[in-house]
Length: 343
Image (cartoon, rainbow, N blue to C red):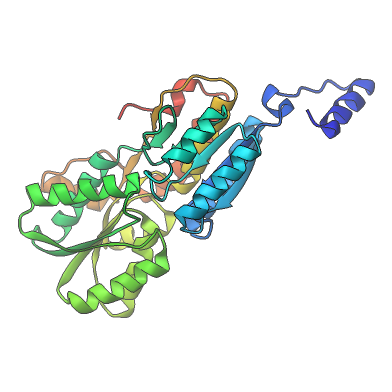
């Protein structure tokens, strides 16, 4: 306990004020977070909600950006090990490159959680999503929206990232098996960066003038790519992932057939909540899965149902409510079981 906190407790006791200090707050638990970057809207929102989780759980968070560099990511983890953090949350750029430093952290008695990435490092935790099945539905929705025939492209995050790789596989496997007349003409990493996605889309629009559809493993990239298409007077059908509120106009216009709600705020809060619970000694499964929701307008859901894709969906309006209800969904008053669902 810090001298400042001890002084506040002594003053309050002398004044006859009943002051409760949670065990987490008293021990000054530090949660170190190594993000891919802290510039895109998704990561900014993650941080905002993650800091709310830290306040709710009585822990301290330190957010650091790897700025897209695997080498810097390793260095930042090393720093948190030296600081004797209670837990380290990592959004891995390269899951294999991080195994040695993750093992080093675990040997130091630090809980390590890889966010959205299953890294096999003998004892670390992983916060995941039902990505393969979700992205299979995204692929079906995109294929149906272009009439089951034509050229489509996919923007991914980075090779070696579990989320990106799993979502890509769910997308490509489904189209190959179920939609032989849909051709994937481009799959390109854009690092979750909307400006990079815009550059890739510019090239695709020139190279593939008959391109009909676009999917992204994260909505921020779809936004960047679609802005280029609109500027060029090109209308693309879109299906994405993450449930960013900015996608609502595309859904309402009919351009976007399906989205999947993880939600940046929910993701940020949930991950810090998991780290805080582990730091407080709670027992959690090594692999945790966040509950997700398919988002579609009533009209889009009806159209998909007509072609046999019957999904339980929520509207964009409802998704906005769910996306910011993270304190009630994952807060400290909830049981440990609230942290994960069956995959």
